[in-house]
Length: 242
Length: 355
Image 1: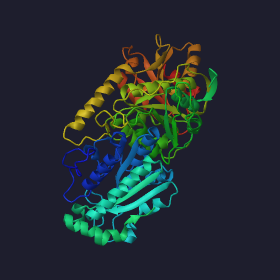
Image 2 (image 1 turned 180 degrees about the vertical axis):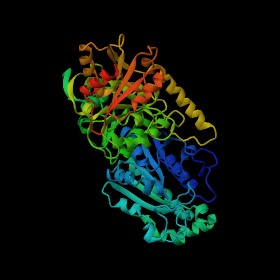
Image 3 (image 1 turned 60 degrees about the vertical axis):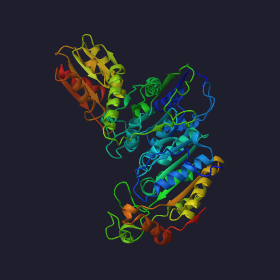
């Protein structure tokens, strides 16, 4: 009988530390499946962020580097330039990629670094206890926006993917979601494309994943998925941006 | 580079020394007074040479933060990596230097010091001594800090720096001042073949045929970070015992010993020559490694010997001299900063008062 489903080789067979209903576990697995399908595990180098996914290297079975908060794309730039034959990707949250690391993000993209970025947008800082993220929605309550995010005080949710898509060095930007199995499947296809682009030397590719954080959204795992579908994706529309 | 002896600035000598030492990755951000260094790297880093058939990587980074984090990535990937800057820029790099130290990555960081605090000015200074020798960023770590006093020594010590960085898996800082960076002197070039990157079994190369490598400074499990810190401290202890360097001059009969490093030591040497001509028994200790500090050079000496520490700062290295002397004898200080440089005359006057 043909085996059509198995534990990915690029993923250690361990339990993760993530909260129930968190999207990180799903995206870790999608990355691992893509790495296996493209047969690149032995030449992949991942950059783990500072944030909830800080120990992503405990789950992925390939070479990984830490990066200081926000600096993943500077670290990745150098690794890729030193080792162009390796496949190098960063895995970053919204605070990491679009607040403290915006400069590194924009400039790596603008240089057209041949890298793959998996960008987790859960509209909140998870690891530090649910503070406002650059992508927090208007009206969304967090521990630092106790009456909800207000335009006058906090500005607007930052659409970093749309900004990056305007740069000539960027070849591929897609926003995907995890709110149902069909969307998870599409997310995997987009991540795979972003890795393929790097293998083909096409330049900077980014996949933004709308990912649930039930703990700091104050919702159950199922409600969190519904919130992405009914609220979050209105602010962050899904689909190919570039 | 066919000529054996060339006239170049300190900044260029550091760059050339790095390339000669097998540096194959440089990332930097422009800042005065070290701009000749980044320009030299832009020109020569990508060029092939005997022993280095493929050119190295040069990146002008978007910020000092990006530059030091690129050095982190390059070193993690196995390259011999360097960045350079001047005081305000080196302050910005401290986060990355802490991470490099916490991840035990070899790297060379150049600081061509200018006046501070804040934006300060672009005049030469030595006021980053504390930052360089105490770690600078967060956490319990040290850098090996080498302080050249001339262009030839800048060239030589940069090569030593790369060697030590690899030997101890540590970040090495080349600490010069604006005079050293800008000054031109003849340099005798090394005829040694460029060494290729050393074997780094921990580097990120892709996990073909081995278990995955992880480069990190994060130790969340209880007890792990303390264990790691003890490992770092043990390494620092070995370095302290083996890598302290200094130059000494006319110490045997000296009643007063001048202590100065870098460019300041050259002015102190001129003062010493004048004082000796006048029959004054004066000697000089010039620390070359600022960390580890050459403590032993200050020990087992008569209580009657006095030290005069001279710095282009308001008293930073003097604290290390006092720690080394440990109350055994008098340690006096002469310093100016923010553009002021203690002159030969000021040194002579002070010595005459002390005698």
